[in-house]
Amino acid sequence: MTWEYLHFTTGPRIELRRVVFTPTMDIRWRRMGIRGRDWRRHESNYDLTMARQSPLDAAHKSLGAKLVDFGGWNMPLNYPSGTTAEHHACRTSAVAFDVSHLGTMRMDGDDVVERVQRALTNDLNKITPGRAQYSHLLDDEGSVVDDIIVWWVSPTRLDVMPNASNTTRVVNALGGTDVTSSRAIIAVQGPEARERVRKVHSDLAEVPHFGVQQITWRDADVVVAGTGYTGEDGIELAVPTEVAETMWQELLDAGVVPAGLGARDTLRLEAGLPLHGHELGPGITPLQAGLNWVVSWDKGPFIGREALLAERERGISRRLRGFVAEGRRPLREGCGVIIDGAQVGTLTSGNISQVLGHGIGMGFVPPEVKPGAQLQIDVRGTLMNAEVVKPPFVNTNRHNKTPE
Image (cartoon, rainbow, N blue to C red; front, side, top):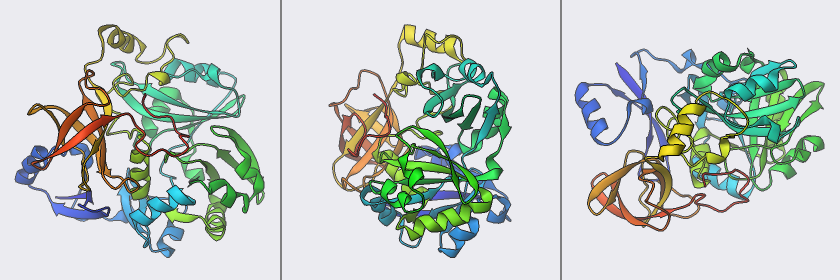
């Protein structure tokens, strides 16, 4: 057997590596705090052509993108400019991410709001058609099955956007039709995003933050939302597959820089945004992740509500916090959080902040460990001095809400 994984180097680079799996290596990885979900198992003859292809796959290859398997999709990790350059381009100008691996589940009918209300944690009655909302799908124990963006396109139509690997689970919970293969999703992010998008079509740039609109472009119906995952202003476009490459190219011609999933991850970490499988997932509730605002207690029953009520009553046993370390050495997932010589928690995400120039991370610790606390992070046997902080780590325009 071989295992394929994304390797984060001591610098800002992210590499795709393949190794031959042995039980000894498995023990060594576990001692380093690396968990099984971070490794994708493959037969020795694994080929990326087995993964699903984005409608923009040919465009990525023509740009020299480094393609990796991400959630069963063949997606760009970075382009020849590299992750660091793409990260800074998003913070200073505008980039485009292909996020077509995210699911789109279409719900139609007069009862769509009622169906979502019974399943997800947030309350759709807080918004109206033409708006988007962040929400969670839980299991009966209150753990986050998936974190979801709901696009309320029209009074009788909702486009629910789950993470790539969770689309089937969300369809089973909510019903609806999986229309993922009918469109590409392009996220244009950065302080100049709207200025660049306006050159393609002025109406696309006018959607408000967390607004949703339908626009006709080149005789195709495009849905545009004022959402994103970087902490910057920006929009996300659901573009029919037949015109997706044309849209992508016109965005690049307008000065938007292509960026891969490597930069998307470092950007969301600087913004303090949780990632499913790290800060959210099995055994992790919204309350532990500091996302209480995603739970609407008074709207009526939803999946996992009773378990969350019980946890709220007894108090959480751990809390997601942000950490900043001294020096340029990156923090990594799996690193221990040390107080008075004892490990009290573990990092769920970590890297070096490209903007700040020092290590940052997120992880779970006892709830009494609050912002301002001084502690240490164990990075492969080296104890690094660190402080607990409240994300985001980098102050942008604070367009994406982070754990409080």
